[in-house]
Length: 286
Image 1 (cartoon, rainbow, N blue to C red):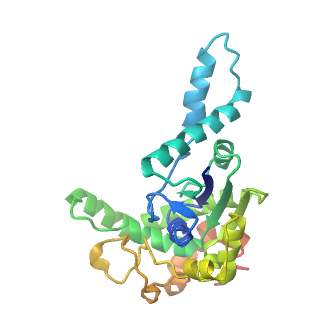
Image 2 (cartoon, rainbow, N blue to C red):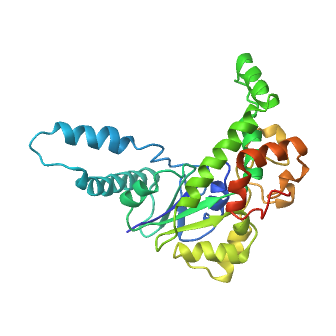
Image 3 (cartoon, rainbow, N blue to C red):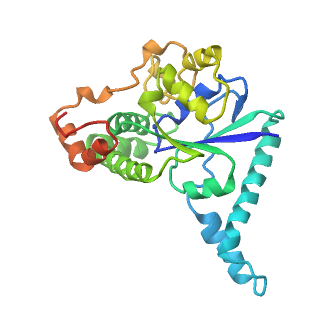
């Protein structure tokens, strides 16, 4: 029998690949695709499975007695269907723990109903570093981009539209993250407290009910960097999906310290309160 553990990121660039790469070093865990952390299983980007599928069928199935109360059982079976599909597609060995992740933090209730026995970790990241990484990834260069696409990207970057949009979205998802409460099967983590932290890795493994021997923790701590928007070889494109074991090539936190007055002021205005509520700052004097 395969067990499922789940990670929901606050938004893009919140650390889901970091956690996936970390857990991929664990001998009992299978990431999908196998031995990689790039796979995002965005099962509940929206609520269409209920609002469009279940509701539509149940309301039009006259005399069947299917009601909203049956939705939990429907979602449980829906989760089982997807799980079996993934096991078959990736030939997951019996007894392995399957790690699933999504950068969409909304709809936690649907995840819980689809996988009622699974541990679900939620991860947030300092909004300033998240915005920097998001902008860098959004402003990437690809050979197949049309001239109009490249011009649009440049306009969005230099006009500040990317900065504003990513900051606003970080704030809205930060509020969603804060509104969730820890319980037996759900726990919130900060990216910064997991990164390069033996205590943080042990805490994550303990929550997921995974063995955390000294060797396993060491292996997890030495996981390569995958999917970073910042890398040593920028010619490979952004983000760089080639595993890099040399972590000295990267800065993981406090990249925002080089911001000037205007960027700091704009972020404080748009999302400063959320930054304080998540205890990344004690005031707006930073």
